[in-house]
Length: 220
Image 1: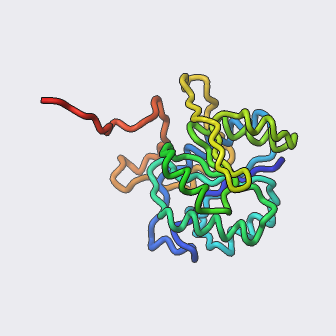
Image 2: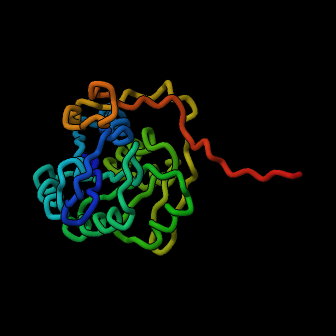
């Protein structure tokens, strides 16, 4: 199966108001690296970088002709309005209803459940770290194995009017993950931050996951 990882633009018409992404899409490249282990047909399209409108995105999809479209809800050091992301997903599904749309990147289970409940354009939400879950889902879809989908941890999807949640799935040992598939993006297209010394380019490497700002209850 062919997979296209589609990074949303900042707006429907592709207008970035002069903003550009400073970092290549780390999460998407990491997911792509794991897809490549089992499926060679995977590509990344950064609509933010390309200043692509929704119409441009459809042209890209029609050219690549993917079976599955993966959309990151969150990426490293970039913020795209959630309204734009959900609108893009709906636009893509309306124009290409045969595509299976999978969203990943968010660890907020409450939000993921609300997205799948309120948006019929989303086929699957990834609950947890996507690197291992997405390839397992693609394999199950490729084999048209519904029993395997039901037993794949880390999925949220609809079965009729019922929402199915197979449980959250977290990667405990990050050292076992593949290095991001940087070969699928043109790294030189991403500009360094202006204040960096001599405009030296650099790219993120994560050694842990989670947020350090954790709400805790304290007793005096």
